[in-house]
Image 1 (cartoon, rainbow, N blue to C red):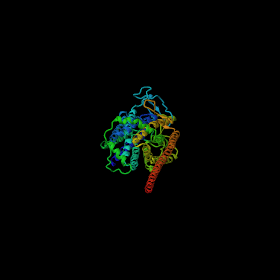
Image 2 (image 1 turned 90 degrees about the vertical axis):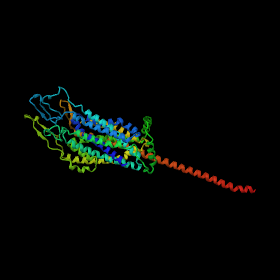
Image 3 (image 1 turned 180 degrees about the vertical axis):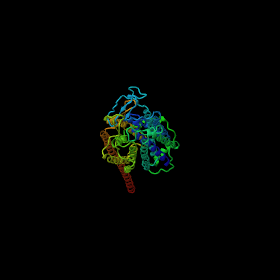
Image 4 (image 1 turned 45 degrees about the horizontal axis):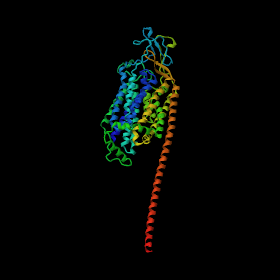
Length: 558
């Protein structure tokens, strides 16, 4: 019914919004907690860790019980996990960004740092109140962000497999693809809203409402700027909680009422009657789990489907996770501007034409600030990143157009390829195939991709920040040439491998269809030959009977 499609579409919207917002805050979290890209990649991959813990069992066992309520419970968990990710902001102190120069009457408290230099020049050892000598002060509260992301992943595991299989079970076969396409269409709006929300929050100072913003000397273009990363998690968490409410009032099975007609009507009515028989015992369901998994993994087409999508999904995760950072570093855009542009680019191939409404100049001139009371030429510092070539702004427009086209063609075939996952296996294995598919993507794509590519990004860092009490913080400047080669080169290689395996899968599908067609033709031929033989036998018997009937009067007369 339209009601179930509507509430499921809203849940798809909320989960894609929270996921895309998390991707948009990667840079803000890295700066706020003073951690490396590999660590923030682990935080991002923790969603997949939580998802894989339950995805297979939820997709198999959940299909045997009340699926709408299980989806509702998962959405509640997802909302609570998203809210938990915002909690560290209220447990930490205020954000103290690095200053170019700091001075006090105590000679031990003077430090000079040049952001455009690969090293920090400390004139004298810096000692701050509350810091012990040799102590590296790093806040461990980022673990709460990771834990909340794990809970969010556990809750999200129920939405996709159970929701899609529920629709495919009770919808007509000719309408199933249309309904799933509607879900994906609504879900695509989520990244638009998520990245736009990330843009708004990245433009707001992290401690707004707690500090006097007139005293904040940095701007969103500064590499030390941290936006209100926590605010969007509160909005996304509340939205997820609201989307969970309608599922608790939906029935276990959708009413057919004799509306299903066509070739799939009998199977749907049979499934409906089986659903109403009564509760299924857990032991009966668990007994058939391992045999069902063996049958699924022995399917050649399904295995090729998994391999191809693992490679393609690795590239996709790298794109959605690190494209904002790539745009910031390579094209000199602020985090706010990068998020809003990429949010539009991922949803409409023609959105790049609207970028003039959002893009300002690519870079501003550097502002030179002289140090306090020092005349030595080496004591001055330059704020902001070094100037870029004049063609940088033009190439940024080209990159946006190509990125938009890439997302457009990627989404164009998403529904068709997902239908392969459902149609290449037996009907009773549809939920399990979807769950295993998502499990494999998370284990081999969603978890390792942000971590290993984050480590590759760290290897291109030219200038590391320093924490309050010393020690290495977040990276402030990267080698953009090496960054570009790693980013674009790895994505291209992964996609090429994925499409090569996908072509093998298409060849296997065509061969299977041809075999089935030949087998059907042979069966029909055998039936035709058998019918012809039977008809010939009957004709022969009839002729023999007539012949005997004609000879009998002659014999009697003799």
